[in-house]
Length: 462
Image (cartoon, rainbow, N blue to C red; front, side, top):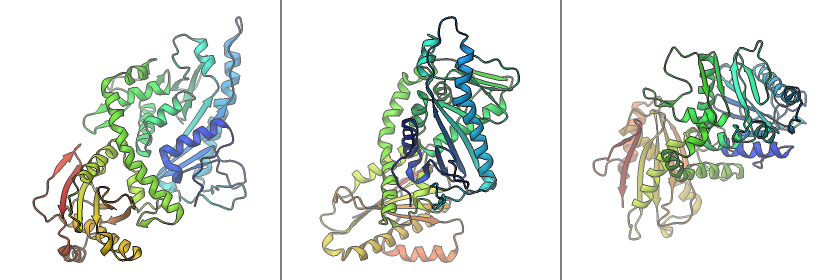
């Protein structure tokens, strides 16, 4: 098990580690891992599903240019030390990973990276964070609002050096963030899927266009968030016009975006979605402490917590809205046992969540161990019954809590049910088990489809 405390050698590395811990959670991100030769591999490594994020962080202050000085000389020296060397190191790190050599969490090589890498189907994101040029950049040009580095991806040959513009080879792209836009990007794209989708869209654009150029990573992010493909409902970078061969994003796109009413409203609506993040983090804390109930191993690709961490921000918002409605609708039990079940969807149309609130008066629960086992069994029955009633789902994730209306203890149970191969025997077994509970059988279910895929069913019995 890993220490949840973000680490790092320098202040900027610690800041990077803290940001990654919020986006990927500390379970899936590792500060300062090591290679098999005892040398540091990178500053932060994050691994989730088939995505590997390699971060290199470097800080060196670039002072203001002196009048009469050729600015390209000092700029070239700073860029060589802070950017170019890290780009070379990132490409070397990718080669190391793809060679199959091991990653360790300590220099003595006593703890291996606990997450296996599927090298045959891995996407490696190489990310450089360059600090130290912000003030010099703002002072060099009045048109630069925040001192962000300008980035261009194109052919590498015969491109002249110019201060605060980093030219990168589009044949092997590396992402460059800086002091200003690192917290913007990881603060806006603060789920693993949202962040990886953005990086993938960027790689697609680099591959598609002969030139991709933008005045700051935050401006490219604003462009991305405002472009949605109506067929796929996904954000993209570039233009649907096939005649375009270059995309240039002007300075100030981010400032314009954050002033728009729809963006402000979206950010406000997102606040309630962090309940989902807290549930995941709480489960990870219990796992680290050995007190997690049910099927919730966070590093297990076939577990409930892993499935919950896949959800993007918009889906977490919809899920929490459904959960809060269910919590508010829990019936007045008059002291009798009661339960309230909700079924809602995922961004993945083949996956659904069962959210079960179960209330058994303390006087008739029995001892804690027996009650917990029974609660997990009831949750399993609810998940199996969901599959029987909605056969289109291949994965069911179950979450069970005591109703917050009646109990302050927010202990959770989790179950992951693989329904890919659902036999007649399983169907019959869950039908039999459900006779005592009547899940999905207490009247006509109320179906509501959200965002095309999201199924919401309310079912209560007091």
